[in-house]
Amino acid sequence: MAEKKNKGKGGLTVSAVNALAEPIAKELGLSIWDVRYVKEGASWYLRIFIDKEGGVSINDCEKMSRAIDKPLDELDPIDQAYFLEVCSPGIERELTRPEHFEKMAGREVCVTFFRPIDGEREVIATLVGLRDKDIVLADLDGVEFVIPRKDASSVHLTDEDIDFENTEIPDDVDEIEYDDGSEEE
Image (tube, rainbow, N blue to C red):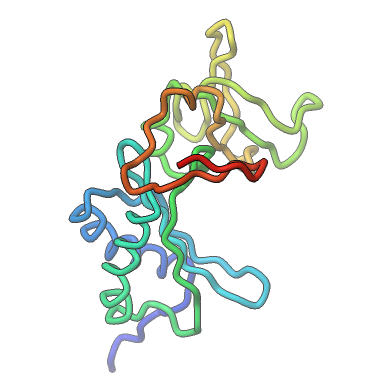
């Protein structure tokens, strides 16, 4: 009897797509930050979050999307229709894997709780790292404290330590549109 392929199951889909995407991303000078297979409304989305030193451009997303399209069709890990999105994890990226916590140690993070802890729904502090199943943070005085990972609904970077004034704009960006509608070329 032939082994039945377990398509459409979130964890198996994510693992299969991650394994497929890693070497393709590496070939393009990128890394895979995360892969998510989620349902939003009536639609399913396969999101591949890519990263690279210095940041990701729209051209990087396009190149990765084109490069993975055919191999993904051949792998065929999903039975139903879905939308493929290749994107940057963003400045305020969510930390979900142990390697994310390791890579972002020393950066400011916002930890949001499932339920208030000591009357607070979130805390902003410097990430020290993960220790066992705990998130280790440091306050402004450098005093370390621990948040059990099971109590955190999300952990993401803040944009507090980004130097926007001296951030280099990638060569493949023609213009920037700001929230107020103004543009810069």
